[in-house]
Image 1 (cartoon, rainbow, N blue to C red):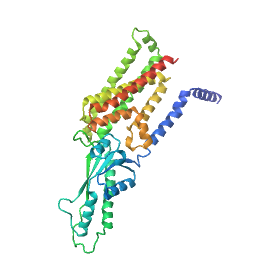
Image 2: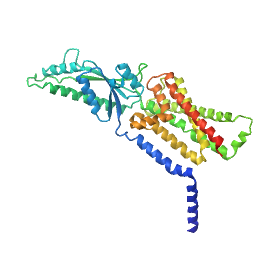
Image 3: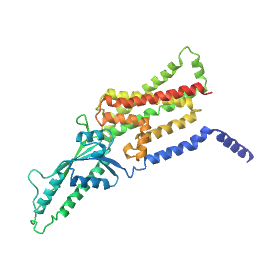
Image 4: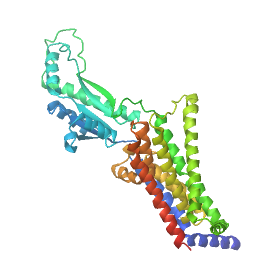
Length: 407
């Protein structure tokens, strides 16, 4: 028992003295659990932002807006409150991802509704050529189908309640209504449309949404083997021998970065080929890139630069391979959770949506969605690519400082 107690005491003392080890054991899991719970706080009770463009500017438009505002899990914003008074503006804001949906209420809805109410009172089916009034619902292609159906259902309920409210207010249930008259057709017809800027685009599938997301996740995971390679070189003194060679240090680092960029490109194309040829055999839609391939390559290259430099920084800062093995995956999972890989950003609570802008995976995924789902072009993804390269440069700077001052 004394030997066991002595061994136990020794291990506990070693653990207490290893401050980084304590951080990895207690702080990192606590941070991961907290962030995942915050990110998923509203997954079962999602909130959707809807922009309402009220061209009716009358009672019906006001009733529709109030009904949406009172609906569960919908944040309705009046277009005039945000300086948006045209249909093109509403589509643009949805296309940029600021709103998941936009509802355009046409002019003359109020007069149309009351005319229909009077016709209903007389048992008529409707005036010729004016059976319904069309209300357009624009949606962001990156929004998943289940949420589109939920919003469409909420809008339909609001319109149905509006119809019955006007009928009741106008007392249009008279006793002299013709027997056997056919039920009146719905007053309003909802038209769904993509908020697109570059012509027709295909209905987004789960494959188009998930393949790029998890491919990017895999690309950033190269930080683990890269960091391990650097730590191994440092521990077996290979790094010291490399320093004696007549080769500038930045050339050695650049060689690592270029090598892992090539690995990332191969990794992405491997995932692409699986999505293209294997998924159809499993009954899934084939993954296709309808946008410019140059834009896709720019995004992948920028991601690879960011991931490789982050791996080098991790290898320089971490004290051991075990530390890198815990810090690397944990930070990548946190960045993936914040970046919309695990849960779409639009489903997160408001503060978490703001924090998600700090995740490099969010920049990369948004750029991919711009190309694959929103029909955008090369210039539209350059800001995100630039942010990824700057992230890599910052990580490289931290690596240089750590290498210079670390004993």
